[in-house]
Length: 85
Image (cartoon, rainbow, N blue to C red):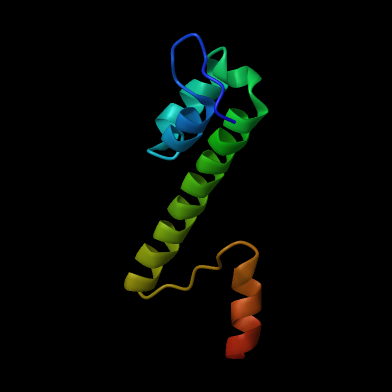
């Protein structure tokens, strides 16, 4: 996966840059030739989903600091069952 695009940025480099923040990921999904590479699209989408998960976890952390119970999607019910609540 070291093909270079006309801009000189390889798929590997674009895939890695997608994780810097969600902004490059969105740019790569919108901008040819990166949006035509399944490799770059995979890493861009994964970066966006990771960012969303981080926001959900951050919200849960703030809720815990404020003394509130926040059920994290998918794993919150499992944690409640294990805790017996």
